[in-house]
Image 1 (spheres, helix red, strand yellow):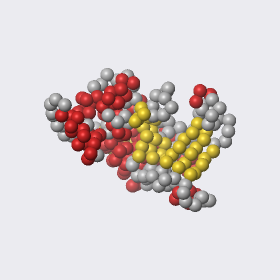
Image 2 (tube, rainbow, N blue to C red):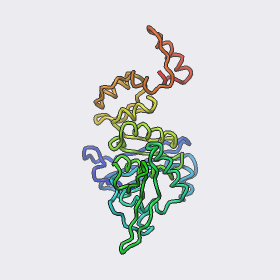
Image 3 (cartoon, helix red, strand yellow):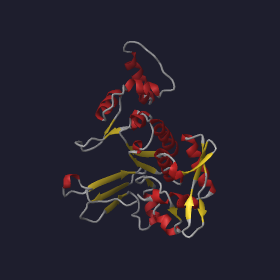
Length: 291
């Protein structure tokens, strides 16, 4: 995925933008970015200094899946060469070659896509792209809803975006690190919740930048961090008070307590100050996120 470095530094300063990743095996990967200097990458490890790709992956085993900028499908999509399709899979123009990608997919991968579509749209059946031979070969891809076939170009934008998001996830290993930016912009609140369930069921770790209370409510409080413009680092939300401040910060009038109750499977009602006593037990047993 190509990322522009023109505005990578903060407030046009001369200092490098620094990314630091710490792996569970103790290794650290530091990346320094600047618009006027080459990208520098440092691997900090207790083991042998890697001299090959295999050794590097062994020292820092991680697959990074960054969902690219999403967009509407092309009305007419020309058949492209394999090399062209492969080079655009994870770029900002991937949506323009969506049918080409799935035309070349394996039956197993396409079956998984159909299953992921059915999670959000149970009444829709997705069909694999077909090649229409003519003076300029083109691809078409149909979906069937209520027995009526339609081309994906005529579907709603939410459906098109869901297809693209699921496409990025299908071939990713479960130990991959998923990065998504503002998926709530495109999706209905119900689809936002379903997206989180798909992500949490597939990936061991993920980063989702969002202003959506639907997405925030769908994950444990301990997994939420607040990022503000004036702060040097993110602040982890670890309790109800922090959660309320976060909702206020993003401009939501939603009640933190009621939102927690709405996504709970079991609820215990108590009176007075008993909650503090239960919180002590929860902390000792490692279940404080439930309070």
